[in-house]
Length: 424
Image (cartoon, rainbow, N blue to C red; front, side, top):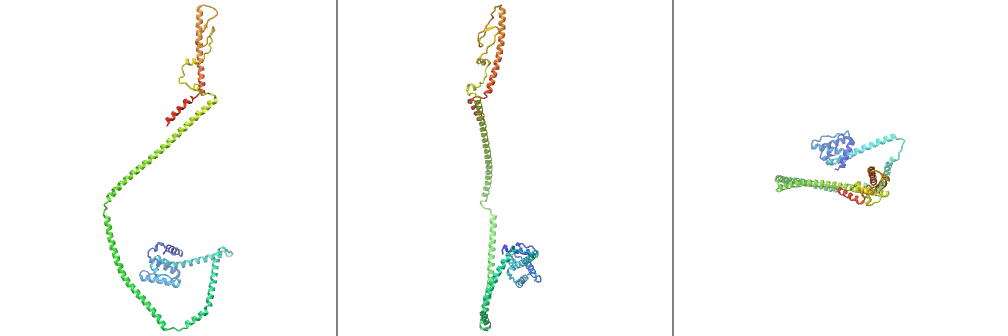
């Protein structure tokens, strides 16, 4: 029995139109009713008028049914069936039924092909396709070669017929010897008797073998019972090391839980550390970028100042923290000439001597009045000069501020480095 035989049998029965669906699992175990039903349907399919009894209830009915089917197939279809395998009604019976189904299936196929060829001939009477007849040409060539070989062999045999005819006629014409015939019959009878004795001995041995097998079976049953009882006792008894095993198992479970917790914490801390390093790296890069930008700005300003012709010196670039008083500013600035009324000679600077007088003489009152007027005029002039000086100083400071916007190199770079250190 093989899977291919079961598959082919089921597919052929489905193609032949068997009304019941046959599964490949039906023949895993003996199923005589199904086998008898299939055999009866195959016989009816081959010869609808054949009448075979379908009673398979008893053992004798089954044997008679199998013999009838095998005899019918041997006489009508020339198919030899193994009755023992058919009686087994399992996968081995499928091989025997496959012989019948294959014949019926091939007949159905040839009929379908013939009808299809007839329809094609009717549809294409005036068409001839050489490509579709290549297989027919090959078969015709093979048949022609077989015919030639069989004809040659037949010719050789017919050539030997003359000698063979004489020998055949001599053998037929020779009279039979009774003694030789008796000897042959006696030898045959002796052989049959010997075979009968052997079968009888085998039957006697079968009885003794049955007793031996029964004794062995009983012994095996007793051993099985003992083993079952022993198994039950072993299952009921608790091992001595089981308590220790359970304790160790509980400790192992606790250790595993702590391990899982520590592993989780460690992974979390590692992720936090990675985030911290990444942030630090980003900060460092930002500070480097800011320092680079500031350095570029300083260099650009230096280039701009160099282009404008500003000299880079400490006296010109230093900006004092305290601007100082107006008196200090006036000391560093040269004094302007002051207009003096009724005076012939005026001194330079604020500390210069003044000569006030006229060419004409007069009363003392007039001189005093003239001196008072001169003093008042001098005070007004001084106030005007101070205002002008303040305006000039403001203008000079605004011009210097517009020209110089930063301290020299030595004063600004340490401040930048201190700010970058604070950022870190």
